[in-house]
Image 1 (cartoon, rainbow, N blue to C red):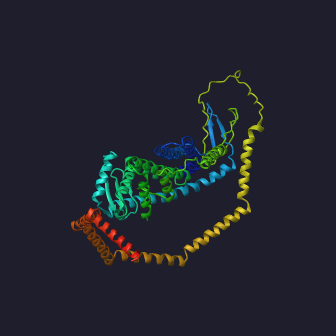
Image 2 (spheres, helix red, strand yellow):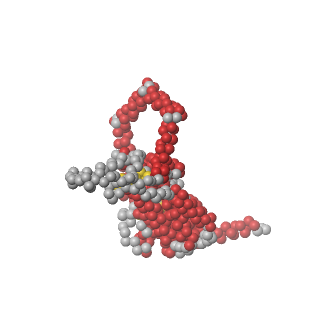
Image 3 (tube, rainbow, N blue to C red):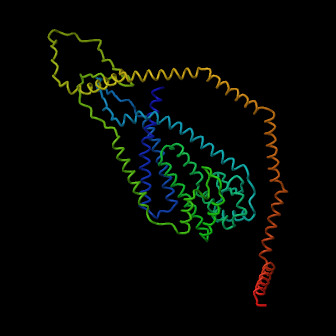
Length: 522
């Protein structure tokens, strides 16, 4: 069991180490593709970045599987055809490999801790999305619903999509893949024109048509597994940027004015006051990215090639290749040995059993004539064959001397003293009093949350919430909203009528005449 756990730890640590140079090569290849194809469409750039992230994740899993299957012992035994034992002792690893191997258990432990926190964040974000899908929803205006249906027919989207107003968000969102829902902030009703709402709707529907929500879940899963690799986050940045650019391209196909769409994005940015959930598709993101999108939409984007970024990518690729070539272990050829040579090797973690030679039970009778004197052994050069054994003995003497040194004994003694102090502290009355106080406070809190007073408060809150929800879903409230919309529509028609315009013209004429009278010599 210990050997299996050690093998998993070593494999996970090596997979993390190799994932770094794999990330360098993947990211460098992506930047090289961008350099070769500067006019590549945003949807293709998005596909390449997503493919790079997928390749990096698969490489991590393949590396882990490779190190799980390959034996991690430093000595190997090889049996000859006849059953005679020969030995193979690998070359002593370099100091760099020794340092890396000593850090592998720490890397694996940190990875497990980080993976646990990543799963907590992942679950928290999913629960937040579920909360947004079920709480604080309102009915959209009739004009918005008609525009929404027209846009769905234009984009040839046959999937059933829900469209609601929400008081829990401040930016438009797309949530879900099988049953997608588009949420608009309720503040947009009085702050955006219908043309601006339509352009943002096209952007959100483009996310649904491109299956961006599903691909985003895969992206977040890969970020969760490879959270330690900075290049997975660089690829995610490219994915998010090119995904928004691709949806902007869809909007520009169906929107006559790019200025109107840019103004809609700016209005959404001004109205935004909360962060966007990880798994949701939002219309706007960071301010820098929004500025870049607006420049791109209005054809004010700079088309020069960012040579600095491409140079950094090339240098990173070169550094990764040099590092791989430097730390790659070198296997030494096995010296030819005769079958009669047996060299005893003491392995570090594995015990090898030497098979006993076959013993014949029945021997033919020997006559004096057939008895021959034994042949003299051949002279051999023992110095060359004993060199690996001398190296092992020298290393063993060094290790023995280190562990017998006074410095090491002092360290052990200090560790024992510290352990004794810690044990005394946790057995002291102060610590026991703290634990008892914590238990008392926890018991009081548990009693309070189980008391009738707390249950009554919760019931009252739930009843009030239920009443509010019933009121906003009642026919009276819906009739009020409809009446307000009708009055607003009448007011709009009145202020756009010829009667109102003629009155305004008369008022302006009279005001002009009064100004002329007050400015006249009379």
